Image (cartoon, rainbow, N blue to C red):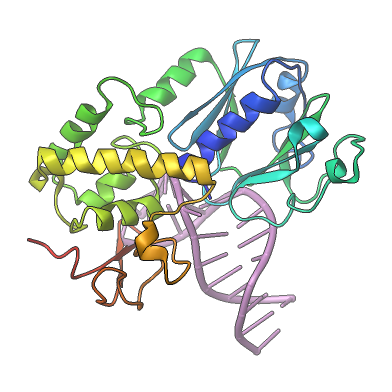
Length: 289
DNA sequence: TCTGTATGTCAAA
DNA sequence: TTGACCTACAGAC
């Protein structure tokens, strides 16, 4: 599920199992053959996540930039050091079946299944990338350019993050629902977190950024930090509080709950569209003031 | 076998 | 604002 929490989990996974090692790379699908060749034999120095982008820094000064888009996913497997195969990204069946490690012996990665853009292999395991919208090798200056395009990331807080977020939002007349999905305003939030953050803050999605108060934005930022950190911990997006979850398994307040009663007030949750993306909200809890 | 859908983003119109 | 693109899968036929 590729919102920011997913990418930060991936960075952690790469640092855990691949950092400090020389890797072999291949592009079974063929579309990244040249890049794979340039990665082969290089040591992975560090993996880094910013918003929805994953950066793998190699020791020849080149960085692999990966964006999963809507469909991308990484699958991992290997020996006991990998502690079970896992799949991180969009929902996938491939890669979730039991692999070598389960059988007790690891004899190298399996034959690639489907369209594997990039396969990274170390002595102890492998990672397969499918369906990314971006997979490219970039220079240090291109890396800096990419970072500069991104707004503050609630999972990579810097001293001025909250203030930058507040000031950017308050300077724009764009609806807050659109601003929350704008990666130059807030990096890492996607459609699920957007809907849930607005509901939890009881904010009307169409409220222009200029109409929000400092207090409301401080609360919104703090809640983004809480929710994304939970996402990293849980490996999925759970935004309901335990007391609202007791009677069922509902993980979200409004996302994909259109036509169902709001967990707080019982009003039917509505589905609308804004900037080409689906927007879920409770017309009562989030009515304009 | 075909269609619709998905937690994303960009360029063209 | 729309279409294009990346990929796999569920459900309809």
